[in-house]
Image (cartoon, rainbow, N blue to C red; front, side, top):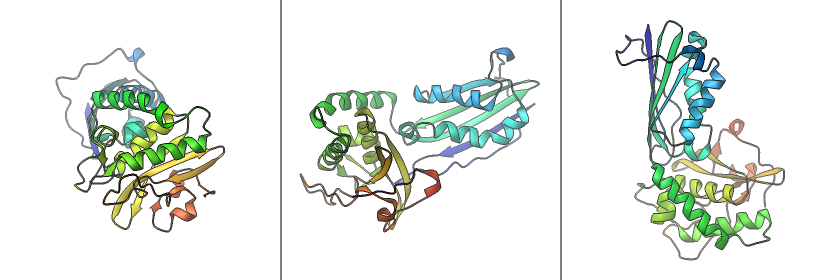
Length: 271
């Protein structure tokens, strides 16, 4: 009998940290119950799929039984939980912290991940509702994809101010409160772009002042960088939207941004 436990934290003052895991072998708790093995996923991939569904539902506790190789599960638990957290950019960047446990006995195992979110389920629903109402005003009928990106970029820059207190991280903070750090800008841009039919990513890296996040957008077959935070003057200047970091290539962004290029699509174009 054994229990494996680990934890991770996402979202330091400006950005998330990578997964940090701690594994401990301890006794089996009395609160552990087994589901029929035949009903449990038998592969790591199926187990990850089940946990991802629960994450996307904004569940506070992800749980799944597992009937596969317990040694493989123990060896790959960090990658498993990290893969679940990375399965959707929006969810990935509203998770604040998590702790997981694996309890097993005989042929059965149970995985449990307890999560704390920066943005509650209700707040995420409010973001979705407001974006659905807002987009028809921002994105006009017949706009090209590039025109949609420009309209969304300019709206965010002119309606959100940078949170110099470094207390607000989410799209809800940016949209409802009107102020956020880079994470809030990137989350709101991601939500608006995706809902407008433009493929987008959230990218993380560093700048001279520390950790930073921004967006990648896909237009046709090409990817481009989009940093709405750095296109917004600090202190805020009403109605002013720079385009210094609008649709830039990797080479253009590397002047003052750093990131793990292997983790993201290459942006070879740029305007």
